[in-house]
Image 1 (tube, one colour):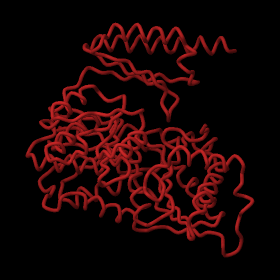
Image 2 (cartoon, one colour):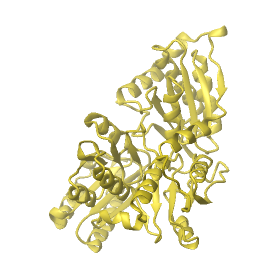
Image 3 (cartoon, rainbow, N blue to C red):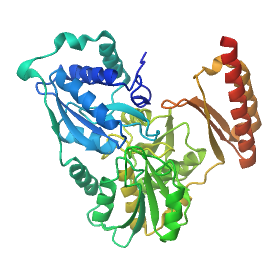
Image 4 (cartoon, rainbow, N blue to C red):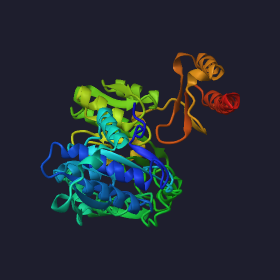
Length: 456
């Protein structure tokens, strides 16, 4: 069983275990040692978002990688999908992302891509953990000229920007479009404005002044309200918000309404079905997606396949079934014909392409999906106690599901990246699901407190 890696790499408070300098240096050694076996001249790319702690973690990883005889190529701030792209494009042995995505700036994390640009499967993460635990790497440290070197890649942003612009049809332009861009003071703060302005759009910018501590701070995909106000103020065609590492997208339409991943999937899936480009007439999403997505896809002759929460599980299902469109309600969108991971900027370009080709605003395009009432609430917890150890809470969930009937459902799950329980209630009535969700939040807090009290 994995101990360090969660659903999206290793994550925690920077400068504390497991995101401590000591462990991150060992992680760099383990990554280099593992991938060195099959390559004569191993090269590992390291990119990051804009958190203050990224500087020290970048150097710790680089030191670990070089100490086992691999070369480290430092990219600087770059979106996660950009690091995946360059890992493939530069023929690197592996790529490392230093980012805690949507988490507060005090957190940080590390995720790894293989040479193919895909996130590592569980079995390789387990092998890397085993290397750290046994400390096998220190028995094989090279000396002299066999020690690796660290290099800085100066044109990483330019390379990634060119790739993105090449994904937008050459016969189209963004001339005349007015866009609000919110880059969350994160990894997209340079590349996103560059891409959209060079394609012709008039851009008004939010969240492009990172200072190491303001990433995701009341801006970006998690906080689109400011962007919505700007869309109305500047009479923009739409707003595009990315999270800290820019692998997810949230849109605000021309009316100021927020559009999440489900609606983006519905718009893109409907268009791809119309053009005969949706492989096997299937969209992949997670158990969190609104049931309205199933109805929207069924209407155009397609279906939805669901996975566990996490974009890595969406991608695994896409690879397994050879599907080419997938994503999450949170805004991770995967277009497998041109990318190996979720990419917020790429997803935005697809939406803009559809807008131009169809001659419609996003407010019109989104009508293809009619959402069922759904509410999502978070409860912070000290400990992730298995639900089966909270029998009273489990029984309460079952009773509430009976109240909802066949047209509703309840999902109770622990976040893979934060110390929270996520409670999602979906059903026929907004008032009903709101009341049930509030009751469940209170019952969860009470059940957790009672369990922890009895264990002391």
